Amino acid sequence: MQTKIKGLSLWCAVFSSTTALTLAALPGTVAAEDTRINGFYENATYARDGVGLSKFRNTIQLEGEKRIGNVGIFSNVSVNGTLRGTYDGVYDLNDDEYGSEAGGPIQLQDIAQGSVPHGGGIAPTPLFGFDINENPNDGMVVLGEHLHDQDNGVAFGVPVRPCDVDSRGCIDDYLDKDEDELRFQEFNDRLDFIRELYVDFDLNFDSGNVLSTRLGKQQVIWGRTDLFRVLDVINPVDYSRNNIYDELEDIRIPMWILKTDYRMGPTEVFEGFAFDDLNFQVVWNFDEFRPHDIGQCGQPNVILDAGCFFRGMNNLWENGSTVANFAGATPDGGLATDFGPGQIGIRRANMPSWKLSNTQLGLKLEGVYGDLGFSLNALTYRSQLPSLRGGIPAQNPFDGTTDVYPSLIAFDIHFPRVNLVGGSLDYYSQGIDTVFRFETAYTSGEEFANTLRERLYSESDVARYVIGADKNVFIPFLNENQSFLFSGQIFGQHILDHEREQRTYGEAGIPDWEHNWIGTLLIQGFYMNNRLIPKLITAHDFRAQATTLAPSVDWIVTDRFKVSAGANVKVGDGARKFDDCRSCNPWDPFTQTPGVVNHQPGESAGVGGFEPLGRFKSGPIGMAQEEDEVQLTVRYSF
Figure 1 (cartoon, one colour):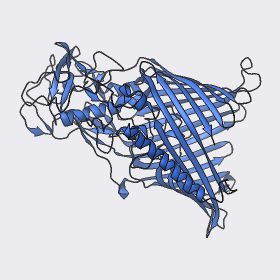
Figure 2 (tube, rainbow, N blue to C red):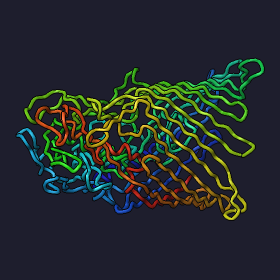
Figure 3 (cartoon, one colour):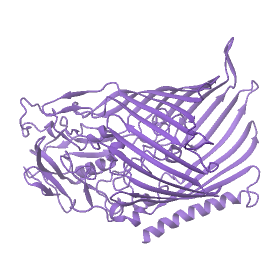
Figure 4 (cartoon, rainbow, N blue to C red):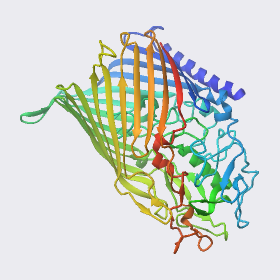
């Protein structure tokens, strides 16, 4: 209880003091003509099938703008700020699922006995095995147990309690949130309660061109599409709030950025050809590197369940653990095996430190020609998604030697440098009253899991694109007075250096699909003078055969009070299987996969299961198949 009061007090104190300081700078308590202050309070309450309460998030957001005017050679000077604080009561109200009481003792699959408790696997030599007192059978779940219960591949116990309650598997400086950081997510070392804080100013030239600059903590929006990002990759994203389903405006993580635009207005490129508007933009993200927040195991939203895989693997490395169906594995299963510390797992996350070479630089040329808008984009940045690189020194549990073994499932986490080029188009067709949107990006430097390679990853160029269209359509029998908005888009991804081969027991290589498409559709109506807004959002992953249906209704009760009710339902095939490298056999001559002739050390025989690499075939929709929810949100604006 003391922790809860401490966190809540901090939340209230920061908002009270910040609001007081802001108002003190104003001429009186009522906003002046050159000053704007507004905000809202919001409660989002979600209930998940089979789990109960999955969100009880209370948010206060305060936004302010102070227009200063001309300062020296600069014009249109203004200061803008947004403060946001949340308290998610799910960690207190449903703590046996998400808080200090989450998890419990577990059983792991074993072909000989059906199942064994954590700590009850085989230990062929004294170097196998671990101290059950350091890694007890409590406060855990089996990796992926909410998605599947059989043939689960390389599964193991994953601690799920906050890191101040149970530090097992908490990766320093990456996935190591304590209970207060889960409850009060914005109050952390990166000062995330300062949602935005920047100054705008213009420099006018005699030619009529303007250099507009924004300096400070901000979001830079490059994309023209929704839900899936192609060009809009400057800011990382907080997927722990609500997976991929919240508005990007709410889940982008603002960074300290310098953005400057050279606005040329109508510009003649050569005689007889002129743009209606032309703009050149430079973006320098000089903030310390920040990856996506993928969710820490023990939170309600852990995209791809990757945070649980990482936490369980770090616990394997630090403390040793039992791995299901490992020794002598074939597609029919294997023997649960107790590994010792430093043998397999994730050793650490190599977070890029702040230095000039780790900052990010982007260039964009943007213009308008008639009904056509376009942009050309280039960006060099650090991948905001983690990459697992094998090839780290680990202990051979058969003879005690430490070496780098081929295809051993022992990793460090890295965030590689990525280069992106791309562009976008949007076109309004007056004849059919439709807006068409197109966005594409080509990247080099991205890394993917690959069980054909000795370090279990490879680099590939990737092509991505989104094609979308927005159109208002009258449906008289539903509404005689107003049209419905139909907005559809198709997202494509193509891994250009994809590798996959058939082996004795199955395919090995890159689990991600070589070519994949996700389609989305929004249908939105308007009733009661635009105060009742029903909508349906759907998304379908074609290769994973997974679909999300999200119906909702917004009721704008008054100009200040809004109620939203909805659901998020998934249908489809769910989790998928893929090679998990149990059969990679790096410890020659001690291990051999049954039924495989001329099997070389480090070579996969294609033995696979749901865990851990099947998640990349299932995608974010498929890996959330058991997360159906009903949702209620109320907001009061002031």
